[in-house]
Image (tube, rainbow, N blue to C red; front, side, top):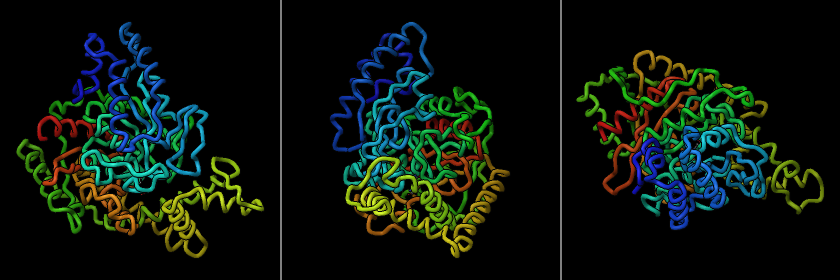
Length: 474
Ligand code: GLN
């Protein structure tokens, strides 16, 4: 059991001398050790975390502490931490050491969070099950026969198994929300551009968002406030003002809720459907107005997403050529051979599949038929959301069509795997924020996630609604 309910109560306990930060870090390190079989971490920074605990405990006692003092955070292994490995769970970056901090990481450090390690993930964040990692599978803490979801599977499992307070992840098509739903934790994907991508290894640059996992809405809100904001190092980061995320009460604010039939069709597990419908009913009883809205182009999201993201990935991953970063094959006799064999040996099969798909959709003759068309579909999907958000504030959907599946169940069928993202990729195509909250348990005890979507930069509404549901419905 956690010795506190949320971060604010924890910091109160520390201030009052009732919780020792040093003991708290030791507690998490012990749990990490005991849960090694989950394989949630690629690297653990035990000594640094212990040292930081001593320093920050002093700061708290003398009231000089930052906003997240003592919060124990894990970082997905695609985000740079100075002098630490940044492997992206890939053989090609196995020995790569970062020379600077990602902005999101720097902001956590500046507010006195304690970084405890780097978490396992799908290679270059490509996957929905964490089975594409050069560091091996991550096991779902709720059932170790099952996947934790992906690609931020290690971060989700670490928070669910209580190995840290909060973990950063990234979400290009659902990689925070889907593993959050599989593991039974809160997973927030902010608006595209809300959090600087500086120091995040690019997968699909116009989709990638940094966000986080937490055990409660309050912790998710506290971290949201810290990591958001404009950054000179990321020209796509936004200058939109950052609200205070301290007050999560609705205080009479009427948020209108949306129901979209398109998210409740074929392929949705019946228990998940019933659980989400139950929550709709309870919210109705609490006086919320629920309106049916339409997202008519939803059926094209997976196709558009996999065309556009593979195109961007094929370009972003061109830099791993054995000359500039990481792994270099020594099997080669010429420069060209060196490029080829470094990439063939360094990348795993899913990454190669995506590079090939992406190169294909960008090639002359196919560019118009696939890439350009998918860009048009992307705009139409965005327009669908624009229309919907004229009517409602928050759209409630399942996060994933199924609960966590068995390890190996979908590895032979990439299309089947891609369909796990059917409810999450739309938010990335449209650039809007979303949160997955642990809504229920299935009859076999597996977590069921519910997704809340809001218009761009409306993270505060999302978190307020999440908080209301956490307090009054669950
Ligand atoms: N599962 C999706 C994919 O494989 C999403 C990945 C992500 O959000 N990083 O592309």
